[in-house]
Image (cartoon, rainbow, N blue to C red):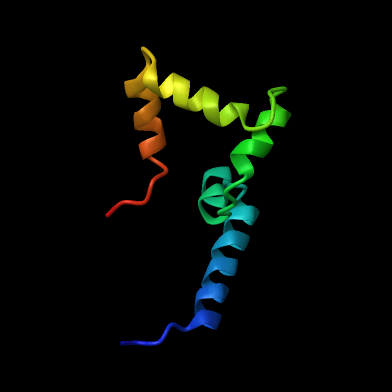
Length: 80
């Protein structure tokens, strides 16, 4: 089994993050910035209660526009 080269992985992530920042590509920044609580923090920025944004997204995903919403989210999921 090969050993992980942690310093190389960290350097690669930092380089990709810095490039995304310099290019001001929010989508790329959010793909790299893996903070699970970000959705909850968005709630308060939108004037919602803590964690309400996440619940809103789930409700919308089950509603009449579920196909469109789910297809947009699929663009941001890792591909196999």
